[in-house]
Amino acid sequence: DDPLEVLDWKSQGLPSDEFSVQNGLLTTKSIRYPLLLDPSGQGIQWVTAREAGAGLRSVSQSDRNFRTVLEDCLETGRPLLLELTGWELDPMLTPVLEKKPLVQTGKEVVIRIGDANVLYNEAFTLYIATKLQNPALASDTANMMTIITFEQTAAVLDEMLYAMVIASERPEMQRQRIGLVEEVAAYRREVENHEQTLLSRLSQGGANLLEDPALIEMLAGTKEAARTVR
Image (cartoon, rainbow, N blue to C red; front, side):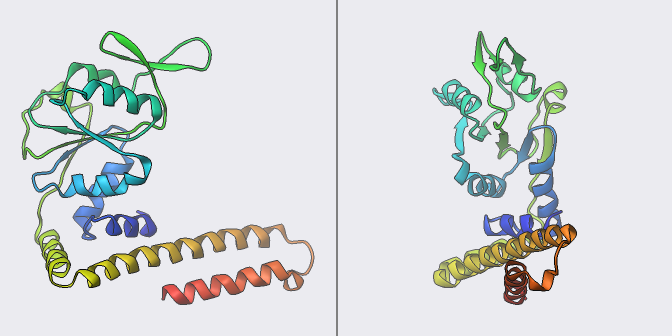
């Protein structure tokens, strides 16, 4: 797992214990779309924070505009969080879960939703979540998703309780804590970018590298960023 990505997850509200990090990896790296079993709502809150910048839309199957929201996300590539309130998935989701868009003539790619073809944007991603601890889904439906259980382990509860107490008693401290996590992640990403650029420049060789002002400035910047992270 990428330490920088894990830091981002922590700043977005995902606990940093090993179990939660594994859940984060399964949620973001699985080939199939994830189904979060999330009685406490912790996973839903994390996904909401993680995808906020990408224009995440949330909808329930029982909402009157469910199909409209689904089609909009498929067409625009916006991420979709589908919250289940029951034990069944709408059949129109089957081609989405199977990731089987239909390629038509030209450059347009469409997917069949109900009785209509809908333009399909490959940037689209889907999160499915339920607060039911053990939903009785049909096996063929469950096999189309990666099922991830967001359990409340002792480590998770400790971290959540600490965050709740700090947020309640010392909200400014909580904001500073989140800000520091984000700042450290940004500095580490900066160091990583500098290192990649330096390796590229060094591999190119050429004239005396010590006489290259841009390279010397970059080395100094990398050193300062690394010192800040430590």
